[in-house]
Image (spheres, rainbow, N blue to C red):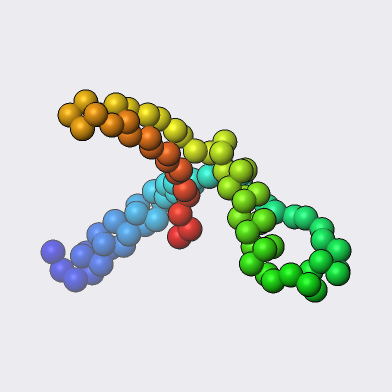
Length: 94
């Protein structure tokens, strides 16, 4: 087989590859947003430290997390203790 025949053969193979469909896997994830919003009077904000507001925000968001946490309890007879477990599954950013 000479060079010209090889070139034609590889051109046909290349064109066949171009006609093949490309499969794309699309994943869609449900995203819930937990949000904190509360209004405070200016006098209260000016007189208190930010840690109070951060505490309020953290407490409110933690209460909203309750519906996303899977809880379970099991008894460990060898140690005579109960084990309480809470688990949250998170979608990672890529």
